[in-house]
Image (tube, rainbow over all chains, first blue to last red; front, side, top):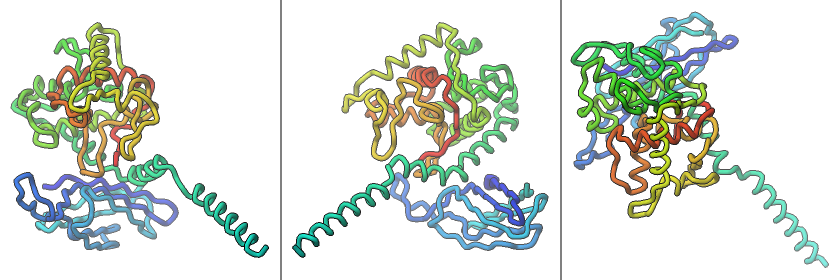
Length: 103
Length: 269
């Protein structure tokens, strides 16, 4: 099971700024280990976000995104107390969803 | 006459261009500070902090116990403020210990882990990765507090003196000491400013900035690993994990940093 994400969601006016920190190796598949063998690619392929259950963001990611990636986005029409959930799926089919309450 | 005017205009333009150039040029230090600022908001050290906090409370090891009764110097279970007083002398182990070796002691006495086994695990693997995560969380609990290492015990004062000697000890193929790079202010290695560690380098600099997340390799670096890498850069043999010299150097830097505000865990390029 993958490590949890850190999600912070803050409301200002009618906008909610969401900051997400994901824990992932994001291996490109281009690197070799000390024995010269290629380290297999392992990266997040899809990121989705929902606001009170309604999808607000879908992103397709590739191997060029850094290790332990940071994502920030803004939801219009959000307010304190709302629920924001973020899900990622990697190329091995591993999945992780975490939820945060807007403050 | 005409050519002279043109020459003058050209000179004028050249001077203007020079001025513009000087204004647009930021110092390298400013550029790096800006880059760090941009990264700070999403410091992945947060992930290690969360992992460390969970590890502290989780029942683990052969004795299936948590670390919640671990004494980091301020009493069993007191975490807040402990980081800025370490390394210090611990009567139970009769040694001056830094944060990481103290955590290992607790993992041995409370949870039943094998200290030698942990010490020989490479950084970032197995239980050693857990020690780093725990250290990250403990350090984070003292964020914003000021360093104030005790020097009341004879062993603590001795540790400081050993650290001072080690700091100025030159050797290796490059005839380097710690002081070669960290003995005066205003020096840098490539684009990194080198803090002067023979005195208090200021808030959040040097000893007050580690553990830190290294963006360039995506690793969480503890003070033990930081020192280990300094030894490598000096072409010295690697020091053992938690060896006396690493703790003495940490004591030396920690005492010198008295009054400096801790920003650990920080983020580095």
